Image 1 (cartoon, rainbow, N blue to C red):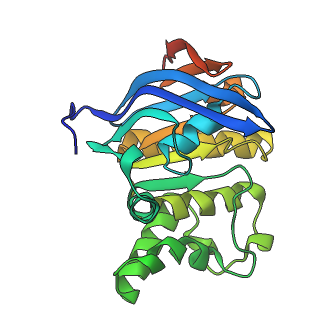
Image 2 (cartoon, rainbow, N blue to C red; image 1 turned 90 degrees about the vertical axis):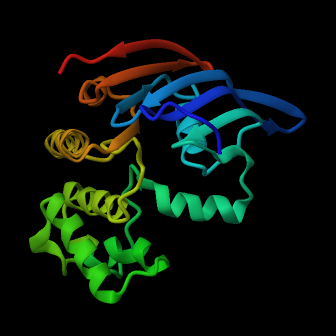
Length: 235
């Protein structure tokens, strides 16, 4: 544990990451230092290869830094062992992906319930949590539908409900509208904005789409692995 400002949920200091490509070390992120306030809706932007998805994965505890610290809600996740990190992710991070990652043979209800199967909740408690999450995303009438019976926008809503169902500390979204048509994308972004405003969810979203980024409350720009521009979005 480390002391932290209660208003700051995520604090990165001197974070660096590189990958091996043959005999070469390719730097992806270099000296990334910034804070994310509790209740923020942050868009990470940058050209392909700028390191934005890598940064998202580091914050979510999916990937490991080479050096630096990442403190989330007072806990430095960098020093965790993999089993400890897996438990931390399950409790604190909700994931929203570009291609939904739903299981085709499970209903909307069963897909949303999946993260709860790892908890000590009773069957009734799981049922109540799933009902609440699907209600929030406006899909209470689609609980028994399979992914193939849902539109792309509806599938992404199921994925968001799955991310929400454990009441995570942060939601991380990697190009959440990248596979959607314009209308569905607008609906998903409106839903994410509502989760941020009405439910106080802290959201970190990677996007290459300026229209999507404008739905966030602030935008940070990455370029060649370093943090460049920061802007507050007028709501």
